[in-house]
Image (tube, rainbow, N blue to C red; front, side, top):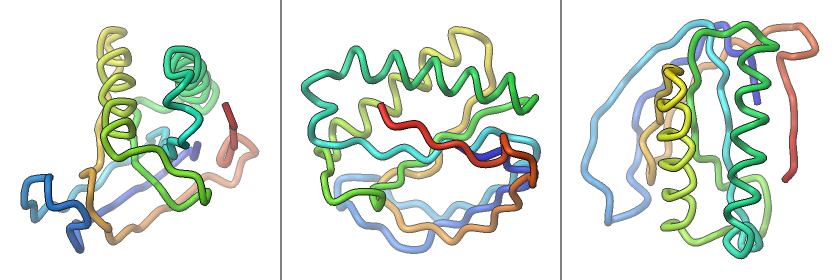
Length: 132
């Protein structure tokens, strides 16, 4: 989890044929940028893992005093990866639960490599790692 003072992305290369073709570029300021990596074991305990993730994301947003959340699929953190279907389900579940709490939430394009520019806060809350 990152306190992104600025975050910019642009779609670069599609990696999953099942997703729609996009040419997208967006920029955000003062956001909790959440890199999400779903592992194979998470699929077996999805309810518990997703509830813990939701709690941690909301905690980070409040602690960093951001005004929005960006969910970014980042399947490069481990050699263990869930199925793309589960990763997409997890991100959509988190998005729905955050929206139910009236929290502005955005999701970067799933199934794409993206060009990224990130300006992270220097405070300790600027970079937080949680393993669920």
